Image (cartoon, rainbow, N blue to C red; front, side, top):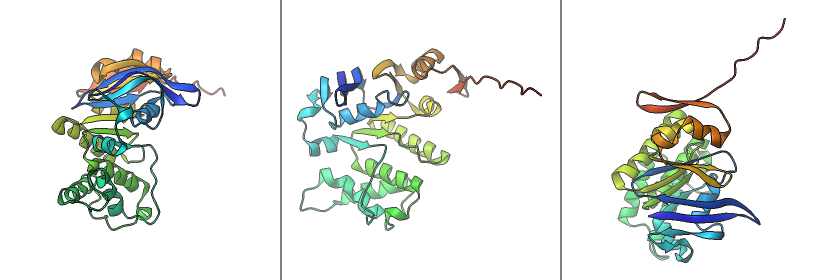
Length: 262
């Protein structure tokens, strides 16, 4: 169980997270939604230990994240930030091999199992035939899929992903989210993901955590949390939530344009 308990954290003296308490259970795809600056990315960084906590605690299996070593933590949690960078000379295959860092010693190379995980990850994101290519030769969408493949190849029980489908076309948005959903369902992985698209959240999330001004406004199963009232409160926007072919759809209410005077 990954758990945050009354977490307060931010940048400098100004807290971004203000008393956030959430339990992330195995086998669930948890989606964080909310307006820009509400604390979604900050929460992921706090979980990874990249930000000091002003108050509260984050625990993994009852143990404080603060006392877990970085390499040990890398065997438990894979993290995909919004923006990722690597040296220009690196090939796709070399990038994916970095996923095995936490499992290998300084003197040993990738194991047979590692290489299988690398190949499977590339196949899952549709890049199996591009391992030899420099990352600079890939399109923006292909590079994003490459970073997703590296996270998958890390093969951790917990995966944190910050806006993983923002640079992908519609086909790969659904392909990646279906894949991540299957990892939660079939392998009982704990997935925590930031999404901006409310309709993607309603389609794929098991649990939705709504954040506003650094606090949790609502959390629970998507069907219960994704209401017109909650979305309106969080995004300051009038919306209609309705069911279409078994899926919830969020449709903003747009005022009709006034006719132009002759």
